[in-house]
Length: 109
Length: 423
Image (cartoon, rainbow over all chains, first blue to last red; front, side, top):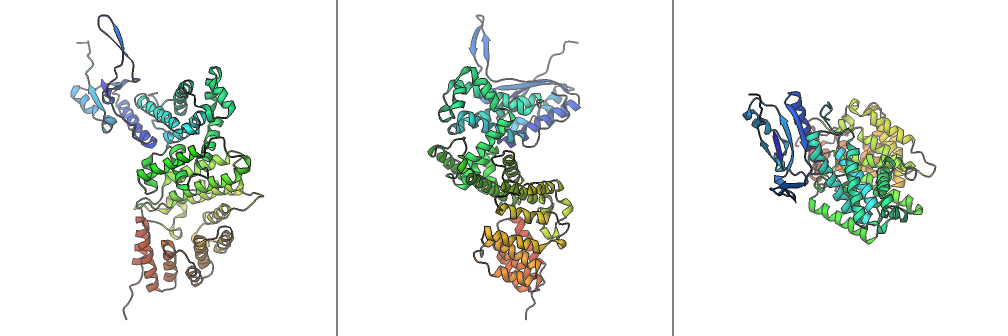
């Protein structure tokens, strides 16, 4: 799983934003063609957190924009190292974004 | 959404939709709250980016954007009282919870979007706003360009453009400019101002003084798009509007042939006419036909006729220079000035003789600092085998232009001169 953090395009012009988005479309198209793309979702910012034994509800998390999770992909890779290499293709690094690469556990062993 | 093969948005969709949304939202919030409108547009685009990058392009990208913008607008209108300078009917409709949502929805229908854009053009080109500020405001709000992009196209810096926008917004506040449009009596005058702004915008794109990009496609495109918009409303669909659009189409049709692969200029004389955009030429002819107006012949009509004459001639050699000379003469009556005189002189040179053309050019005053005059004289001197004078003229032209493409062209002309033998 690729968990996408941050990546702020607000300083870009509409034209530049569109061009940036195109990079994402191209990336996903490539992953799809290679039959590596499994799933993906975008997450709305804000929300609530439920925590503790008393199940307290608090607003948030309201973290710095760099730490906000924008969404995730689930992809197929031959092994973890390959997945990390694949993550380098994320277009958002230039915008201050980062990708957390986590291996989804498979139970058929 | 992922199954889509065509994983690409229409060119400049974001920018154009930004312009449309800004127009509609400004209409809803009032021209005085234009900043708020732009904020909502910005937020809408950011939201689109964050979702589409992961989920792909929605089936109706424009509709998606409008839905988000609408929701925000309704929220804002519910909470804030922005309708002070609104037309009384809109104001009441927005104030009532019952009619708020349907009213906002109506504003986002196709006709209304066009209507809002038209009102925006007129408001942005209000006569009390200085021309450079008008154009900057139009490009920012209606065309969705960023300050940086506008600065680049005008060979300026962000600070200057920001100042121009600030000046425009001050005027809007001072003069209480609204989107209600000019009174019918003022319409013709205002239309003239709008057309003039679009003409300047197109001209900037067509022959930009930017040192490393001769043709600013984007500016030409925006000017044409807005002019087309004007032809779609009976109030603004006048003969001269069509004439201006015709002129733009003809000029734009040569874009692909004007520059070589290495960025050097190809003059009309040596352009590969098969690379002229036939579709645009047809459009040019279409709008020229629709420009016939009982009221008047404008400068745009004549300029379009001249451009059309070139565009419909199969080769440089078969150009009807006499006709073009007469058209320039007519133009000189309406729009007297040295630039028109220069073009007329050049046409005379081709219609009659290089000596006549040169004579006419020499008689023009006020263009001593204009590179084109010297370049044109250089060409005629070259035709008359006067290499020394040609060299002098080309050198003078070289010193007066800032465009690197034009410098290269002039260098080439200098190199093609036979070397002056010393006696």
